[in-house]
Amino acid sequence: MQTLKLEISGMSCGHCVKAVDKALAQVDGVTVQSVAVGEATVSVDPSRATSQQLAEAVADAGFQVTATH
Image (cartoon, rainbow, N blue to C red; front, side):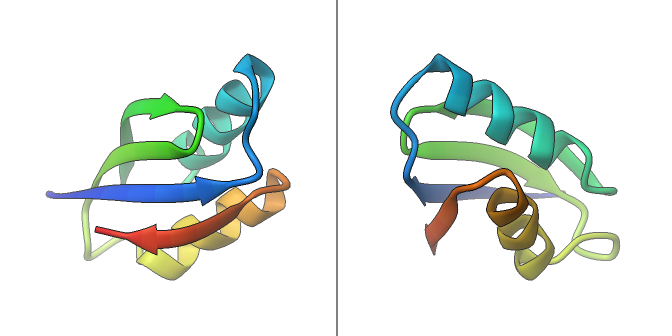
């Protein structure tokens, strides 16, 4: 497992946090550690999920990943 911190733009409230948490949790191979306004920390199995898949899940929820650490 690999831990990634995602910087996410467009989040402003608890509803946003829940939407991003739900979107990331649905990606196969991802365990959500925490989500707060503007960021998320996840554990990723790199053989099952890519950073591109994470970005797409966040985009589908209406937000944008601006950086991955």
